Image (cartoon, rainbow, N blue to C red; front, side, top):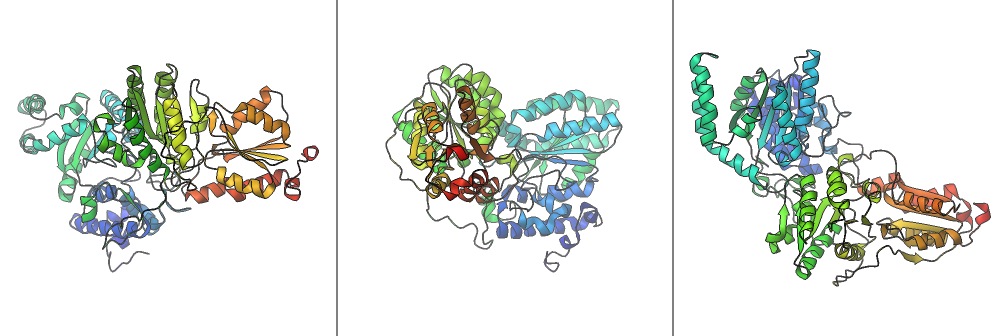
Length: 632
């Protein structure tokens, strides 16, 4: 429970309605308490940090002036939604965020009526808010609609599609551009430069707004000033981008000046048509280490707020680290390699590559579709691009993968991080579907390494393959295999029989191999490290099907359409009736929990695999070394 002596005002705010009982003069003190409580809570439990600190004043102002939840507040991505959750009845549970059965890390519709739109991916807020605004207008509903999008989110093309449409249909909505010059890492591209130039326009905006207040609206001089304003802004500032799209632009203003925020929002709240308010904030505001090290403090584990985040001790290399080292080693060996990331330099392991090969490194912003087609264009000119991308984000570039890469059979390598269950970030970030959505695409090579060294080898194999290829690997560390420095390729479409047993054969795709080997040893089963989902090692699968009583497929992917489905399709095509058990992720969106908890819930850890086999075929537990085909 919150300490009411340390947080005398915040302790009495269980909903925005409680917030609105305070006078405006007390709001700065409430913002200070909210920021301090956020620092205390995230330091104790971990979670997204810097983005929330940057929107404390904005969150207070929005919930104070708007009648939420009747008025709709839509957050983009949701990294910055912790203050929103604290003010909307979830204050005392904020320390459970990202934990099993705790609060979701992002806005979630079934968690709170104040979470008007579920989110986890970027650049969706304006589209969602526009849809709400249009639906409200058609019903004659006067509710207010506000979308809050960061300048990082505004690098995503979907945001411009929504701006383009919103200005044309003249919807009543407010877009707040939260400009902090950061995404997870520094923003890239022309848009941040444009927004930086807007910072120089404050004096012009002050003159403009002051003059307009003194003139009668719709009078001759007011209309003249409005016409002059458009031309002047074209000469002095680039805000005409938003104006030409049909949005009335206001700002930039200081997003930490609460009285100014309140004044600005009061002015805009009742205006008709599409409005855009540009606020300047600081990511990590109010906690000095987070202001200095904005990338490091984007998301944190538990830490001592008096000391800051402790440097991690060296441990096993993660799969992301393996990829980062491989990329630099392969770049040294092949000058045609180019690295591409959609705004995930740190998360995807490209920091070292960006420093050692800056001319061959391309961060395209939060623009997955562009990243994939950019790679296709490079491949057309003989380059060998590597797209480093999370599984969940490749979903956003799926049309481009098919239309621009696979149909043309272009030489693009996809290094897919966070394949399978991801953990605390929940359903929006889970990589549950990539084997399913990649396996069905013609011309694709799809590989799933079982350990760190095999990850390096399969990345090399995919890169040297003359066509589209994907290597997907999980979050975190592997079993600790020794890394071979050689850039060695493996035979395409060839699996590895890791254990010869009898009666039962377990076919493991990717990271579940270690658990499969443990169960195989207990049950006397054969165990195959399949390595390739496409092309499948048909010869080995058929040989195991003909010499064993039953087959089990195990994958860290949705069972529907996944690697196991490929095995079933092969057996059906050969009219083989070998009993088959598919183990993988269920037909459901997995909630946030640790990776280990999610694997156990899905039944693809060692205990789950063993239990599923013995439920289906208890005789294998009783007689593990005998293949009793007749009993199956």
